[in-house]
Image (cartoon, rainbow, N blue to C red; front, top):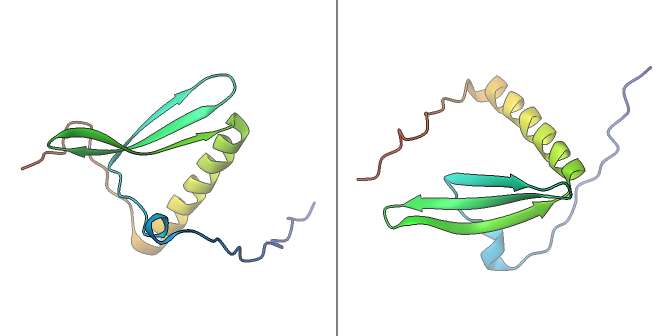
Length: 94
């Protein structure tokens, strides 16, 4: 069986200026129910964590998101080298 050809075309996304700049997040919380996954993107700061964004998706879509992220991590590491991670609690604010 042959691999399916990628027939995707570039997608034009319209957005407001503030949203297009993006938001920085250095932590996340993932919760789920039988019907949905909820991902809270957080900013940990000396004043405590702040909610940056909340995304709610179906379980099927979350599985596709996880696969796309894993694929992109492999591509990133092939180009730039292994991503180093720190253990929970190692990040300190000064």
